[in-house]
Image (cartoon, rainbow, N blue to C red; front, side):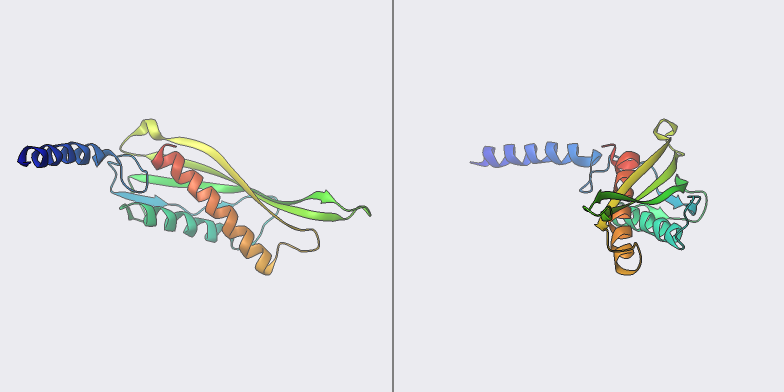
Length: 167
């Protein structure tokens, strides 16, 4: 019986030592200790005031919540920067009388990621997502808030996955 407990303890040690490469958020082993998210300027043709700040904060919050990295304002081991390059509303479906039955808000963000500890991880890539809303509504107020939350949640998670989780 003692041998079984010893064997189970030994197997547990091997399994736990193998888990040091990953943590519960799915990120691989990160040599970095700090990260910075530079302000994402809104360079889209159609400007919605405040979304640049909202996106920048959303990305900071996601990384802070899913890693043990410390947020710094400069000289971070990991640097996220870029710009909002597209913000547009387009009709998706029409009614019989040629009115929009459904509209789509699409946001595209260009991201430059720099890993000062591992330069092979660096990339520049665009991330895009959308939110559909009724054709009778406008992307303002509650509709806009819900749309931004949905879009930024998806885009920030995609950025996180590409830069840290390697999914």
